[in-house]
Image 1 (cartoon, rainbow, N blue to C red):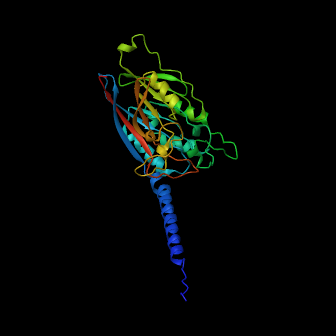
Image 2: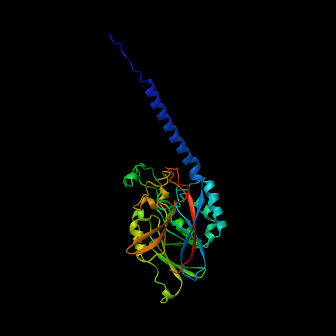
Image 3: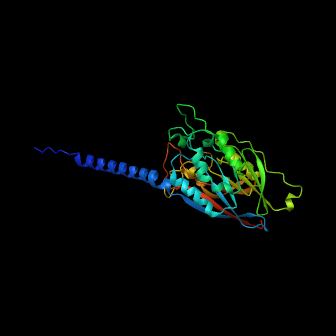
Length: 316
């Protein structure tokens, strides 16, 4: 009689359990790194763009975005204040400054040394409403998700007043010319496209002899939706500045961002790119931003950043 053979599943189960445990431990390790370390690994990214008139002096622009300030963020406050040591010629703030209903005073304390430089700003959704918890998988489906309660209004008016009192100019559905080091910067901005508040007003008309005087057109928006980028580019913007994407916030090494929370391609989630439409091109600078939502305080392979742009002359 042939002996009966029995097969033990214990080694297989043990191996599966070990693999699952390793995966969980690895996931927790990455989460811990992203929550405790990387979201505090503030970085200054620098880029040089040849967009100024041929006889214009070099101009340095500090681009801030998505600060998402929350009371008690001492490291972020200290790092933001240290950026004043760069002595930028101009500051552009592309919104989402607030991350909590009590964040206005801490935000203004962090930005106080930078408010002495001339600047412009546009609002993001988290300058209007406090963040709410959402299912994170809605970012992959393109849905904005729904919260069980209405969003809490933030002190938007007080924020804009404080910026205005410091001399920063609101570009929320507005255009404005600013003279910096003898060069006229013609700005056009929009209110937050993610909330559907954008109303494009074009660029400043300038003087009757503007084509003979040194000037450059710059578009500013919080969320880099295609319709806004196209409008700026069609009107010959040399540079467009935006934020909102958080650079993907949680990226895959070697792959990059998986989402942009807009219709911008993931390959453009952060950094300097060329935006093309109707035979025209603009430089597009998208900041990965400095903060995170209160309900998703993690970054991975995408450290928080401010951007220092050096604008140089070109003969184009």
